[in-house]
Length: 475
Ligand SMILES: Cc1ncc(COP(=O)(O)O)c(C=O)c1O
Image (cartoon, rainbow, N blue to C red; front, top):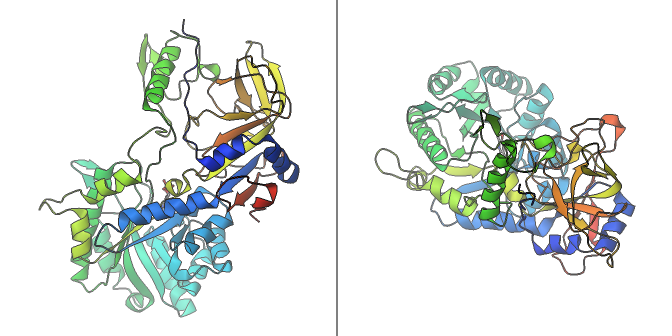
């Protein structure tokens, strides 16, 4: 039976390399900020913005990028976005308020909150921030508040339910593509609507990562814009939300091998490679593997450089590409990337508190962090962590461990995968998880058991001899 654990080697940038290998710096950071700690690297964020801009500036149509700050709560990233020439997509009252308080101009902001409370709507209308309307109640409320405040609201409508071939893309968000046109035409017959609602464009955000679906949705939205322009609506943009893939892993073979080994483990044809032999989406029935891996596609080659040109080259029935039509119709393409702007931006690190063996002889390494401090909707975070040992003179003796967290739940296992380490960590050694800035740090973080939330620090230093004084708290 195969007992070797399949590795999943992460892509690591030089600043991460430096942090991972500097035990003294890690120790000083913990002394000052506690464990676990989220570390952010602003130059990497800026590099991602430039890379997006470089791709889009190859085309003749206008574009505007909004960083989806829901992917990470740090203030500094919202400010850095604007300093680097892009806007910020906000998803709540607090996200919007904080941006406004930090001096971000309303023209660089959009509110796409799924639930829009009255204070949020008032704040947006008062500051002339673009509101993306999701439903009829919201539209009515905005009209009512605009009249009350005697101030027009800038709005766009979110669409969903696009057709790709015979298949309809279902969503709980937005207004259905089959009904939106008649809805808008009727809505603008309401008293005051023409005066108080400045309707400027459309928005959608699709689940999944299909360029064809996005391209097709763009064509259907451009068709709609053409029809509405004939009713004198001055529509200027289509915002296609986020969902641009990023790649976390170095090696496609490792990614494939991992999945093959996982399936074999699920069939009991090899030693388990996950806690309780969790199939991460794969199950077995009558000796056959069913289902699919229910994680993010951590290895993929369809990153922004490939993905965006693919979306933009989807043709319509007259063989006109998305890019060509956007240019001809003078429609600005807007994007709201979250995760892909945070590529290589963050590291989460935590201290080892204890080691133990469980009744199954698994070695468990308890960390000073909990499962919500590194969590996403993915069934597991499929990247090998890094370890930093206090004792640089130790004699290595490889071990395989599970990393466990502080919540009183059997399932507080930080990574479902069993992890191979060169030596058993000692108390006080450090585990580092790379590329956690997008969703992993904050999205599901809770304060159960009254644990403090993780602290967040950032550095603007490119790399090379980073010191504790190069790190600032995101307050
Ligand atoms: C409306 C909207 N915009 C942008 C995003 C960001 O998506 P991503 O982080 O995948 O780029 C999301 C994510 O859920 C979203 O719902």
